[in-house]
Length: 390
Image (cartoon, rainbow, N blue to C red; front, side):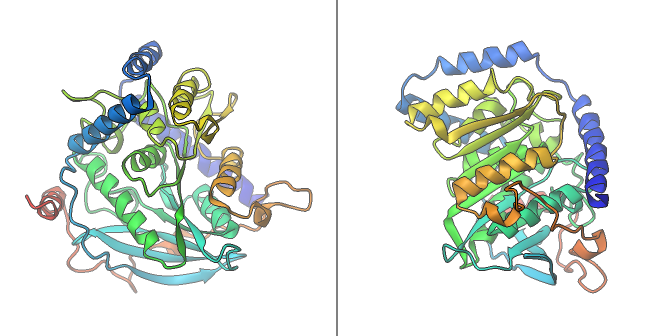
């Protein structure tokens, strides 16, 4: 009960942070978002026409984020330490380089039991703009549950968020969307570097800003096989931060799209949209979900897209939102839901215990940040452009 109350309190704090972030940036009217989807829908009526549109959108996103050409995939130089055995899973602290000198920091959750299929699924868990990020209890609970179910799970910091990844200013750096998108691609490289990870069973799920990372990565990288963006895929809201809408990825002289359509670009791969009545996803059942369903129908896979709507709930990734994600990923990635259900068949997280910030820190006195670590926007952008051959 104490752990549940702590998770609830942390979630309430996160909602406040999310709300302050969103209110600092304008939204387009809800009606305009719906009209945009209607206009987008008129540009295609066949699968081939949709694929042409999706290809143009992907090119627009990459170009708008300054990721054309994509950087060279340099060695990750991954390092982990401080592994802790928990109830059915382990946790260790990890860093690797997405670019030479540019570090991705996070926690790797591994199942302690062997997978029934011989290999494990791999799941990325980006997070939103909560104060604690990957250190939050509800993020830990999600990763622990998925690991216990039979996935190797990587929870990683937003660029410049939390003490472990402060090479650029998350709020002020104009290129943070590019860094974050590239970090997600390299995080996928990292997961797939494990021989015990099955490349045909790769998933990603995150909330709010982590939801943005979820559908952006899925739209751009076909290696993702199932995605569950939580409380983010909206036709009228693009995100309240440089890491979501700070670069011209939604509109250019060659393309125009929105987050609802970007999420639907996962088609025909399994997609779960988790929405609530208390934020910008309130219209999902009648606006965003039908649009995605139409696109999936062109592939002959209308049942591969789902919507779980909680009309009376607000922004966040509470237990009520995690439960449908667990069911979805268990179904699509062949995970063992039985590992987190009680004797009555109900999903539970009673096995979970929170770890402290000190236990989950990647860089500390015993494991200091490497001396070649880049610092500041100028140095980090130079490294990105060098990796692009510019």
